[in-house]
Image (tube, rainbow, N blue to C red; front, side, top):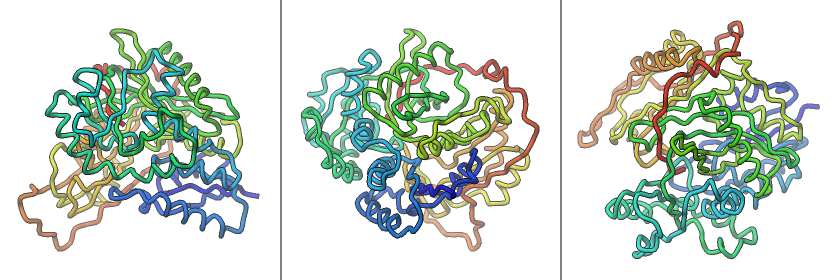
Length: 472
């Protein structure tokens, strides 16, 4: 009998990744809710989503063998609730909230790995004296207690920056109010009670080379399987690309794995994949811990597939089906892979985008390329969902290469071929009569003989400059 695996917000890209993992033929992958109902910058309707999910699951006539998700709030917090209700493997809601409530998470980190975290404090953005109550000097970062995709995170250099950020936070922080309903479901520690989604956290600056460590906990045992470098634009606030495998020294990667085991064991997180964000300050040989995410990051899935031969969806699926994962290493077609962010820094109106034919042609010339366009004609860049506070991503571009030079050179060829058209916002927009529709994702899978990847980690050669944290 095939296993029935329900995936919250399953889309075509992630279905393709799931269908490529080992033993996929033994599973029925079933979409639980529509992804478009989950990603909404105006509201996160958590209670409605849970109600719809329960209704769909209750109406299903077969067995419910696993319930998983690969995106942030609200999906990440729906998973433990639904797993408990239907008796399938998954983390507890309390352990997930300990990770996702940014102040509570810092308190747990302070107890388990105090030498790796910066000074931090909660504050009320509606308090006119909030700045005076922050016990450290500029610069520092501020971010909401709960957020996704770097929304409402700000680097504060002076009082003017703080004032501007507070104005935006007061207007938009209510977006995450549904998170409070989850806090009401458990007994909160005294230090956390009352610090809800309307609050923020201020943190001292941490700097260095940023990376994301991926792992999982299976029956109480913490395992890690890969580290991805997070490389920034020159402004040091927005990501330029993710790149795998990491260039960090082996001993630093091993120490990050040990830190991961300490914090995830302390939180009692179990039966789930996770990813943790770190900085390594090379000058001071200091490892800083940034945050915990309670899921696989789909942004890295194609990178693992290109380099290791299978997506990190393999981990998510195996753990959810109560199976010990056996993740391959360096069995893919490429020595390294990257996810690139094509960005703009001023708001504009989108008047033209690459067509399906354009993207197919790029992928033909640059095999293995996957292009995920953001937005659509007639939309302002600022209307594209889940952007950070400093830029607008108009495309995500996934590529592989046999060397650093080849990877970066192919990326330049790709963006030179991507034809976008924009218009200043103070000029009236007249829609064209016939604008070709952009295909949101076109993947060209190229079969080739696997290459010898034994020397992959010695061929990545591009130095990274120290980078300040991006507030998640």
